[in-house]
Length: 168
Image (cartoon, rainbow, N blue to C red; front, side, top):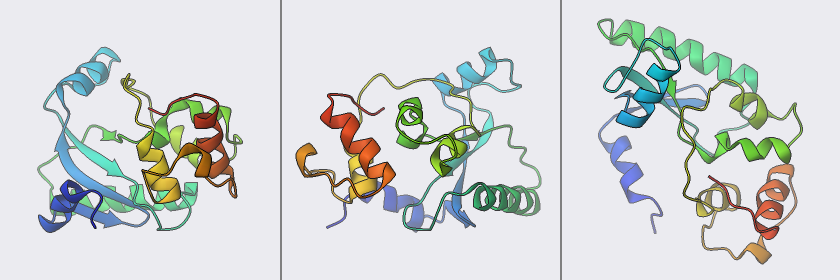
């Protein structure tokens, strides 16, 4: 079955642009994120145009080089196809930005280096443990005890959950 049917709507509507390793979606800043960015001194606020940045799984490493290339492609693509729209921010809502990952991954890991591209505008307070289990292990319903420990990311996600922690 389809685990995230709502996500497929973006694909069917042609709202996502795969530009190298990352996907981009034209959007506007929401109330909380827009207010947080304005409070941080950025020239933006709720309703300001932005690009949502999505990290599709199974498309290879999230290396700095691949991300740099995607961002360059996005700048070129959106300037050419939407010249009247100025995007003030790139926004990414992902468990991969959970700062706790830095406690479990080496500083030179691709995920940590990806995190360093962003400033956290707001922190989610509700745990979302199934999301990393879904993306790392392929099944959000796996029991914590059944999570494998083959890779650094698998160990980080599973060991944190086994220790009673949560992901946000």
